[in-house]
Amino acid sequence: MARLTTAAFTEQPWRIHAITGDFSVEDVWSFRTPGAGPDDFPVMVEALRAAGGIRNQPALARLLFAARWRLGALLGWDAPSESVGSRVASLRDRLPADLRDAPRGWDDDAMPLKAVYELRDESARELANKTVHTIMHLGWVPGGAGDHELRMTVLVKANGRFGRLYMALIAPFRYLVIYPAMTRRWEQAWRDRPVAGRGPGPS
Image (cartoon, rainbow, N blue to C red; front, top):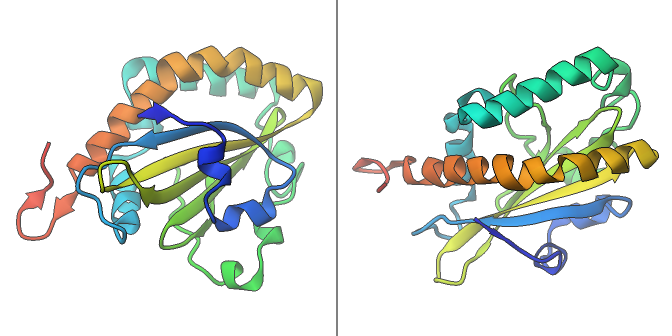
C-alpha cells in the first residue's frame, strides 16, 4: 500500500464526486493487485468480502477497534440517534436515479460501513456517529506496472470541533496500526482469490 495525494482521487472521473462536495478527503491509498485487469473490480470486492471484517484483523487492530467500540458505548457516540438516517441523512438520499437503481453491494455485521452503491469500477460505503459522517470509497484504476489497482479514499465530514479533535487524536493509530494491517489483509485477499481453473491465486 502507498499513500497518495488528494489529486489521485479528485482527478478520477468517479461518480462519488457529485454527491460529496461537503466532505473533505482524509486519506487516499493504493493497494497492490498484481495481474488485475480492467474488469476485475467485482473480483476484488468479492475477495474483500470473503476475507471478513474486523474480526479477522490482527490482534492489535482488533484490540483498538474493541477499545473504540467500548468507549463509544460508554459515551453514547454510536447511539442510534447519532447514526445515518438519524443525525445525518444517508448519501443514498443524494443519488441520481441511475445510481439508486444500481446494486448497493453487500451488507453484513462484519462491515460497520453500510453500502451506498456499487458499480463496475467504484463503490461507496458510509458510517455516521457522534464524531463524524465518513465515506469509504473504493475505485479501480490502471496502475503503474500495467495492472489495475485498488484505491481507497476516506472522506470525512467532522461533527464540529469535537469531531475534528477526534480525527486528529486517532490519526496516529490509523497510520501506525490500522492501515498497515488493512494493507496486509486486503493485498492477501487478492492473492487468495479463486482463479478459474486453478483455485486460489498466487501468494
